[in-house]
Length: 285
Image: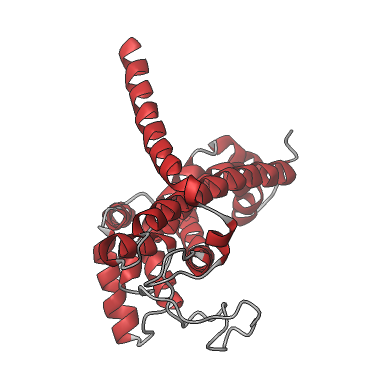
């Protein structure tokens, strides 16, 4: 038992050390000007306004595309598919896809969406590529959440005269909602911090956009999904690898701190939202 406590404590210390180093070196350089100003390619004191918005925009678009697909696949595999060689093969393929390196997924997205479908370097190409990157892990997490619901709850719904689909929709899904939210949160953190897959799809540059132009078809609109979009993670890589600005190290440290903080805020908020929705649906206290 002491050995287990020591190992857990070691993991916690490593995690706290990493977070402490990132936040300690980056937070002193984070300011309102840094968050609300454009990035600079040659001059110091640039910001990450566009990169921060692009990261959030790509996250939202990817979740909008991938969550319904993953939820439907998980419901089918858990509630309707028979346990045979075909479903075992599907689960094996999901496991293999979830372990693919992100650079491989990025090259696949580049070949398919950027070249074949001629989407160029764009937010849409990045979101579709991240969907392939995110779908296996998200499907697996939702499937595990659905499997944790006791079979007696399904039997109770059927005994009340509900159809199987209504039982799944009205009984199983609400009970599994905290686990589903957790799976979405885990995949969202993976999406938000992804860089390699987006270098080849969303691009390494930003188009000049206007945050007052709400027309998504306008070339200058911040909602235009066909524009290139550099994210926070890609910005960190670019500044560290080929940045020409005098304060490249400070910008990279501050951007990394923002990335960590946003992921933490999103995780805490999503967990609270999941518990709130669970209580509302199930009337639990």
